[in-house]
Image (cartoon, rainbow, N blue to C red):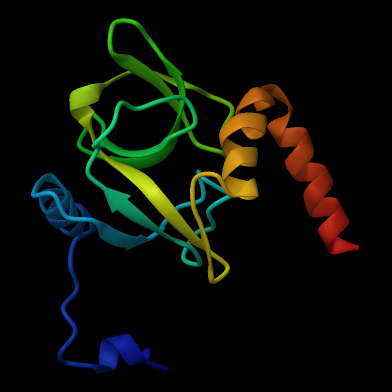
Length: 158
C-alpha cells in the first residue's frame, strides 16, 4: 500500500542537508525556527519524530547545559548539549543518550541554541524542572547513563 505522502503530488521531497541548510540560513538571518527532531542522540529528553525544538540565533554567551545546533567538519548537522566550555573558546559537546564526549567544537560551528522543547505536547523552557534535570543532573552522570536507561526501560516494560 502506497503511503499518503507518496500519493500527494504537491509534496516535494527535500534532502535533509538541503533542508537543514535552509534552516541554518534563516537562523543566521536572525529568525527563530521550529524543528521536528530526527535521531535518538538526545533521548530521553528529546524523542525522535515526537518532539520539536525552537532554534534561535546565539544571542548570549553559551554555557554548560545549553543545547546547541552545530555543523561538524564533515557537514553533518548535530543537536547536542554543551558539556564543558574551555578558555580557548571551544566546547565539549555530548548527546543526552551518549557517553562519548565530542571535544573541540568551535564557536563558529555553532549557529543556534535551543530556547524551547515541545516534549509530549508540553512546552519546556530553561528554568523548568526537566530542563534543569537534563542540563545539570544528567550531565553529571555520563558514566551511569547506560545503566539508568536500562533500568528505566525494564521498569517501563513491567
